[in-house]
Length: 318
Image 1 (cartoon, rainbow, N blue to C red):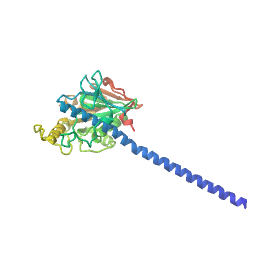
Image 2 (image 1 turned 135 degrees about the vertical axis):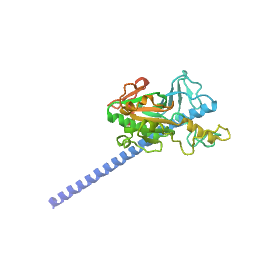
Image 3 (image 1 turned 180 degrees about the horizontal axis):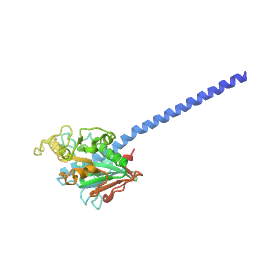
Image 4 (image 1 turned 60 degrees about the vertical axis):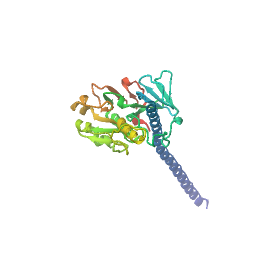
């Protein structure tokens, strides 16, 4: 009798153990899925804060009729948003605060106006800002570091292993065309930079992402403006704030051209007629790069004379 019961008990224990293991695994997988879903939301929330801060700068300076500051870098620590300026510029527009040198402005995210709250007299139009090519290079000591590529005059070379360079380029382009900061940015992939090896790794598609076979075709691409904007340039009138917003959107539109090092040399992009607000990103080494970003195998990046330390570049952020 006992001999017949023992196998049944053992079998029951095995079944219960297997069921418990499956339950634990399902819970673990469920939590993993929740984390993966939450990460993009946290990532976007930081970028939305950056966009709000930059709009506050543009709006404040528009009200005071003062020129916009030249932003060297944007740092988001989570508790504070900081602008590193190319030179002293005071006073900072509210809610920003300038430090004693005037070269750093900071604001706490809670003090920024949410997108649903528009300023009096703007007719509900969203304030445009000219920093649409501000994009995340990576993190340093946990802080997000963004740079406005349009302020880097000349060719910006991404160098390193091919896969690392391609992955970082994909991360930069995806953020510009899908993120809240680059809402007025148009990205033009040129020649072999527009092949599936690059485009298949992009995390988004947008009307602001273009492809061109040659340099001349790329330079002919115009900026894509948000719905409701146009290219007309009526004189700004206080009674027509929406028209002013459209003009600002046109004025602040930016283009980023992405080419391979081979095409840069073959088509002589060095002499391309770029506008002062265009940016040129070159995938690979070129001897006469104005800016060189070295992508390292450990996930860090050397920004050269830009002088911004990056512990983890954008393609490695999760």
